[in-house]
Length: 165
Image (tube, rainbow, N blue to C red; front, side):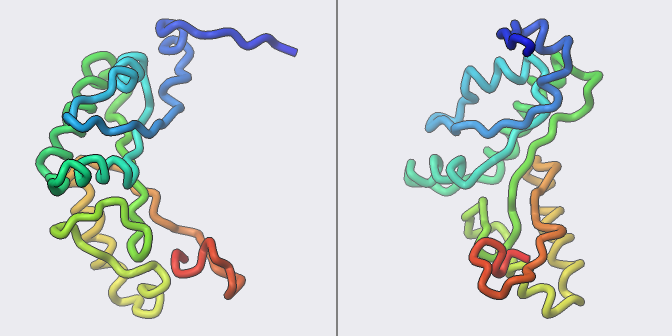
């Protein structure tokens, strides 16, 4: 069996391993990027994913998540990535904003979408709803959304998929 050893940053970048990884990160109360995230970006990280807890850090401070601040964080992340890895293209900045009960952006000014299940009952609304979602996410600097595409609820009592399909 092969022995696994720690890679230094140069080996990680040369191997292309970092480009294959996407990580979540803890938002800092002051809005500054975590040092570990900066180091990973410099080392060739492939992407970051934003979770609801990132928004909750801002909400706990007593304010709302500001769209302009989120967009500037994503610009900063892209700049850090591009400064070291312009040949790799844009960094993936992802979110899982499905609509319905799966909302990662709990803002009053962000469009609230019905669940995918509700939309399947009104197929003529799907395209405009998802165009609105895509445009809204792109304005905030997201370029990948993990919304459901092939979740199929074949079991009416399925508590995981339920209205998410």
